[in-house]
Amino acid sequence: MKIINPATEAIIAHVKEDSKASLKKKLSLLREGQKKWSRVSLKKRIAILQKFSALLKANTEQCAQVLTREVGKPLPQSRNEVNGACGRAKWLTENAEKYLSDEVMSDEGNTKEVIRYEPLGVVCNISAWNYPYLVGTNVFVPALLAGNAVLYKPSEYATLTGFEIEKLLKKAGVPDHVFQVAVGAREVGAALLDMDFDGYFFTGSYATGKFIYEKISPRMIPCGLELGGKDPLYVAADVKDIKSVAAGTADGAFYNNGQSCCSVERIYVHAKVFDKYVEEFVKEVKSYKLGKPTEEGVYIGALTREAQLKVVDAQVKDAVKKGAKVLTGGKKLSGKGHFYEPTVLVNVNHKMKVMREESFGPVIGIQKVKSDEEALQLMNDTEYGLTAAVYSSSLSRAEKLLAQTNSGSGYWNCCDRVSPALPWSGRKHSGFGSTLSHVGLRAFTKPKGLHLRG
Image (cartoon, rainbow, N blue to C red; front, side):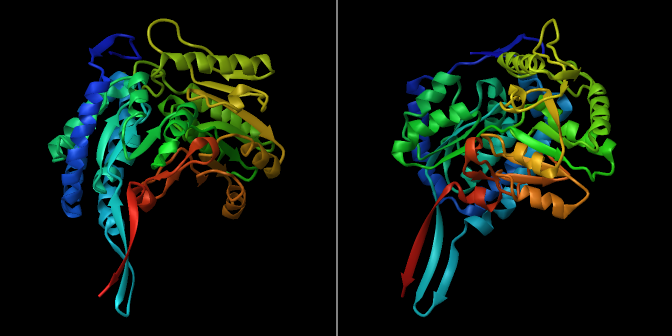
């Protein structure tokens, strides 16, 4: 399998894909290793994963360089991702003992009632390319802490990063027979679905998540799906510092080239502040430097997948055909590399693909609304339900609106944000199950109720 640098289109590595036979061998190794790993004390497992976090921190530059080379994100953003993964690992390891230890529910009379959190067994983690360190940490760290073995399949677009993760986990003390990497593209992913895992955890598109769920559902095993989003943001009439709001929300839309499940994908702005907001928003976007992700000051790098260029361009052309106006950007750069100009559209509506279908690229539509009620109706007019954001000077106003949005996360005066202390979950086509927080730690366990009478 060829590994391509999306900024230059040069081949940077060749890797050997797994076969069905090699995958079965890895699963057999993990099956035996998990039995021993589950008997390792929780304190020792925590210490090993804390060492992994320390190694990740110490090797930030190496990890970031590899990440930028294969996914195309600007180098400072790659460093931020590695640091973010360290932060998530820190919270998970510091809270693992609290949430994974036996929980005494009652100790009255001669009967003790206890909840024990037992590992699922061997879990399959089919991961994503847009934030491989972050979405990977969401799964394999709590899974390992809970006593599971993990077969980790990085996206074919982030394979080298998968090797970096494996190297540091093993160096930290995770046994070879407890964490294995599966290498390959779609065919390898499909082969994994036919194998005898005790749970599947996938991050990616709705279409692939739906396929995975339909395939494994007859086996009645745990399945966590972190899927896409069409995340809305509303700027209310009472915002004060419009320039600051425009800059912050533009960052929420274009950071990592807009290639994030929780990127702002559509913006609704009250008519009273629409013109000023759009003016400041466009000014901010025009200041973004587009170029090779290793160059100083670059904010917009290359799209990871060449195919996504066509998706973004088709959305822009569809919008323009239906009456939208391009205020900046609107086309692919000529020459080598998967570069698309950061694009801002106005005069948009929900008849346009850019306001309905996931973009996963550097494009945003901004729609004028007359009231909070109209904004709320449009925010909920989607098949997705990952995040929703409201910018307002009034907390009560924002909370009232967020209470009525059908999304897993809500933001007031912020966006495109994930905290390890809060559950990360989606609704509708954004998936189900949770990672992060105490909910995410326990997602990799089978709770057992014990009635102990002596």
